Structures are given as structure tokens and as C-alpha cells.
Image 1 (cartoon, rainbow, N blue to C red):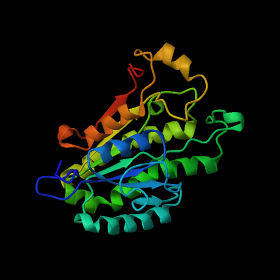
Image 2 (cartoon, rainbow, N blue to C red):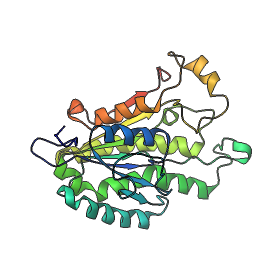
Image 3 (cartoon, helix red, strand yellow):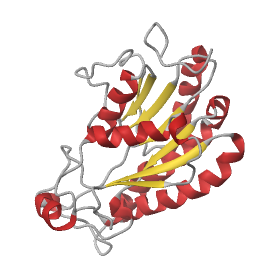
Amino acid sequence: MSSTGRARTTNGPRRVLLLTGASRGIGHATVKRFSAAGWRVITVSRHPFPEQCPWEMGPEDHIQLDLTDPAATETAVEEITARLAPEDGRLDALVNNAAISPKGPGGARLGSLDMPLDDWLTVFRVNFFAPVLLARGLVGPLQKAKGSVVNVTSIAGGRVHPFAGVAYSTSKAALAGLTREMASDFAPLGIRVNAISPGEIDTSILSPGTEKIVQEQIPMRRLGRPEEVAQAIYFLCTEASSYVNGAELHINGGQHV
């Protein structure tokens, strides 16, 4: 870290992270982790910038975007590219964290027999197609930095989950497959692509009944903390993981075993 407290490559500019879904939970913890290391963080969320978030340049580097709109997402890529110009047009890391999971009446899980088609399309636009559009649209800035892409999948992408709806689960499974394809396509450009697959993490979106999962399915017998997930994301965006490509890192206390 330089004398100004900002993370820089050797004789290079400050490092830059673009993160979607930054307003709470894992996203919020990720911004704090990278900001603490001196990175410039550009956040993307469907919500306005949350004033309680203390990181540097927060409101100025926040983009309010509805990722269900592909045209708006492509327009946002142009704005992001313009914002990167002061940093030599480079993007060191893209973390695709934003995701949605519609619920039925009373918060019920929506399965394959009752998920409306419009909800299928909306979920896949955010959870699957937005990462494609952002990574492809920002390939130039990522290539300049020899950067890293991290897709946030889920334990629900590999097993039927009692709370995660069918569209969410299948979109996360698709995102895991996309990660492998992107790792192959982007690596010749010097860009690594990996995924993290969180399990039950202690955030505001936990469903009633999670404690039973903790006791019966998680060998470590506790929830994960958002900052533990953020540390894994940070690892995948730094030189510590320089030969890691196409991996899906399970962060679930052993729930997947």
C-alpha cells in the first residue's frame, strides 16, 4: 500500500473494483474489505447509495441500475468505462454479486410447478445475463489490468434448497457453468474468472428455519459471516490466487460435503 493509503500495483494506479449488489449483506462486507485495502470501489445497485456506508467516494462512485433491463445495463457499461478513465481505463476486479429470488404468498418457496414465466425471466436477467453483459462489456478495462472476475453462485445451485426458489437455484447453477466457460474464454486475455458459492450466511435475508439447517447439515454448526465471504472474494481478486481460474470456492462450513 502506498503512503497515501491506497492500494496500487507496482508503480501503477490505484486498483479498482466494480461490485453489483453492494447495498447489504455480502456486498456491503465486500466493499468494506476492499476499501480497507485501499481499493477504489464502484458500486452498482438498484437502490440509491446507502448513506450509512462509510467508504471513500461512496456516493460519487455509486451507479443506481436496474439489472433486469439489459439495455440499461449496456448503457451503464458506457458510464462505468467513462468513470474508469482517471484510473487509466483499467478495472482490476468485477464481482457479480447482485441476485434476486422471488417468493410466493407469505414468503413461500416457488417451485417449478408454480413459478410464473415472467419471474423466471426477471431472475435470469439479474442472476445470469447481467454478469454476462457486464463482463463482456468491460473486457477491455479488465484486460488492461489483467484483472479478475468473481461470480457469486450459491449452494442452492447444486442441490434442492428448502428456501431458495427454483428460478434462483437454476440461475445459480447456470452461473456456475458460465464461470467455467468464461474462465476458458477470458484467460487468453489475461483475465481470471472464478466463482464463490456461499451457504448459509448471517444476513438479513435468512429464512425462518435456518437454525435447523445449521444444526443438521453444517459440520461447523454455525452460520457464515459476511466478512468471511468477503475475504474469499478478496483472495480471488489478488495475486494470492494468481493461478486459480475456473474454480468454484465453497464457503459453507462443510454443508456441501
